[in-house]
Length: 120
Image (cartoon, rainbow, N blue to C red; front, side):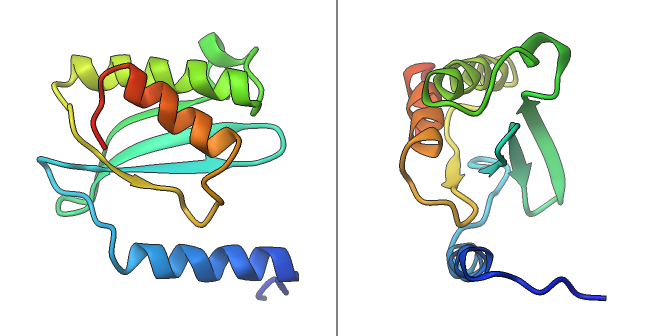
């Protein structure tokens, strides 16, 4: 019934739980969470008080299907997310790296969003 986690997955899950104890999104400052895999990258902006997703972006969408989870493409995806957030009048978010290390693709995505004018 339950999947047995390997050491890498177990460590990420532990980091994720540790981060989520402290990070929570509100209507004024929603939580921006990252999910990455070897093939795709997706980001959601969530208001935890209401339990609703305010905005999302993914490499599974048609317009971003050519992007891969690389450092350069993550920066482009972050910039596009920043534009979507600006359209919805969201200027400040709380960054939830979802247990992933803040390095490489995750860092590049955050930098691209910051360059689009979103404050962390």
